[in-house]
Structure formats: C-alpha cells, structure tokens
Image (tube, rainbow, N blue to C red):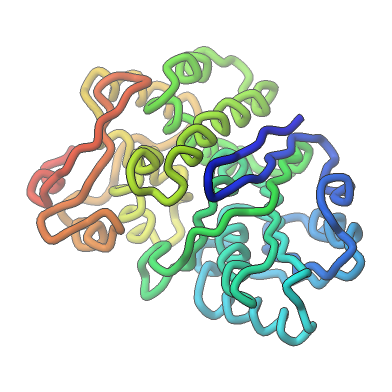
Amino acid sequence: MKINISSRDLSYDIVYEKGAIKRLSSFFDTDRKALILTDSGVPKAYACSAASCFKEAFIETIPQGEQSKCIDNYLLLLRRMLKENFTRHDCVVAVGGGVCGDLAAFAASCYMRGIAFYNIPTTVLSMVDSSIGGKTAVDFEGVKNVVGSFYQPSAVIIDIDVLKTLDRRQVNAGLAEAIKMAATNDAELFEFMEKCEDPDSNIEEIIKRANAIKKAVVEEDPQEKGLRKVLNFGHTVGHAIESAAEGKLLHGECVAIGMMLMCSEDVKKRLGNVLKKYSLPTECEYEVPALIDRMKHDKKANADGVSTVWVNGIGSFEFKNMTWSELSGLK
C-alpha cells in the first residue's frame, strides 16, 4: 500500500510494506551510489539490508542520541560524499529515527544543491511524524533544529517489521506524536487510542491514520506559513524541556508534557489519562519560568512572546499568541 503526498511544490510516495527494507529496488532506482546513515542504536542488519540493494553503498554510523544531530556530523556526511565522488545522480538514505532523518536530509539538500533523499524510519516517532513533510535540521549552540532547510524526500519507506526490535519506551514516545495529531485534528483517532486494548496489534493503523493527518496538513502548507504550525502542539514548551533535560527524556516524552500545558482543563483530563495509558509523563519537573529563555529560540517567537497551539476540545485547535508573562504562568 502507498499514499502520495502532493502539492504544487512536492510529490512523493509513502510506501507501507513489511520487509520493504530488503526490496528497495521495487520502489525506486537503486542502480547508483548511496550514502546510508544510521546510528548505533539501530540494528546493523537494517542498514546492511538497505545497502545490499544498491549498486554501491557506503554506511556511516553515528552515536545514538540527539547530540549526534550536529554540524560536525553534517560535515562528516558531506566529506564522505565528496570523497566517494558522489554526483547529482546518487542519493542519501536514512535508516533510523528522527535524528538520522533530519541530518541525512539536510546533507542531501545541500550537497551539489540537492540530491535524492530516501527515508526509511525505524522508530514509531519517525514513522508517525519526522519522516514526512520535508523538515531537515541540525541543532546548533544548544538550540534544537535552528539550522536547516525544507527539502522533501524522494520517497518514505515504512516497514513495520523493523519495529520488532524497538523497546517499549521508544514505542510509547513515538505514540505521543500520534496522540498530538489526534488531539488537534481527529477526535475519532483520539477515542480509538483511548479505548485501544493492544496498541502493538494496532500500531500500523495508528501510524497510517496519523500520516493521513500530516498528509493533509503538509499538502496545504509545505513550508509552515500557516496551518502546518498545528503540528507544533506541545512543542513550544516541549523543545525547551528537551533541551533542559539533556538526554534524560525522549522527544515524545517532552511533547507529552508540553501538550498538558497547552490545553483546557476538560482536555487535560482526557489527555492525561491517554498519556498515562501509554506510560508517558504528564508533569514537568522544571518550573516554566526557568524555561522561558530556551523558548525564546523558538522559530515562532518574537520579542513579546510566541505563537502557540491551544486545544480547547479534542479534535480541534486554535493558534494563540502568548506573551512571555502568560507562558510563565502555565501549570
């Protein structure tokens, strides 16, 4: 099965197929060189399976974790492509989570002013969210995603089989992003996740339904000039928490906490129950005023405050400009 993401400036397929990582030539041209980026937390077999599909492939493995999404590793990828004489016909492939996807896509967007990029997400988080939509970035000077570009993948390959090696905490952290999309855009999906007795057996359906939401949003607003900002629900405070936590919390866990601070009391009750069901945190150990300086680096911030996403009722949202004083009062 596949769905197509298409608007004036972009068109690519999201392919859903078990075992697809071993059959990449069925989905795109593999008669060329490929630089495959993975990380130390991803089973080596996945990158090797992808590499075996290409005429010639080079695997780069970076340490697991957000700290690897940095300028140094961006330069590492550019140097490797230059060393191996990559041309505009060749490609970059990410086999991993959001860190690999963001970093590989950013390098692909800049090398020779842009070569093909294919994303093979191996986490729920990257399947649900980061692999789709063309946001690329690295962190810089302690600020998350502050250097990057919009660059669409040539295709996204979602192979549910690779989730078998993912631990429970990582699965739940990824589901936080699906909960985010449901809370803002799909009350039926939210209710489905509320009532779901066995998320593992329904993981593919949750991913596909979350992807359908993101498809609609990015097709209308590929470069985040309006509607796409809805995908930042929970992220304004969540990114600040993630920066302050210095690796102790996963991205989805930080978003979970951030969502709890950006909704009405009625929503907070239902949202909190769903987050707890998936073993996600609902309270922040940091005082919000202490996070304000970090929030000021948000790309939607200005001198007076920041544009946020607020949920008054499940399945709906509003954009809300909040002053730094208002944000300091969140609990």
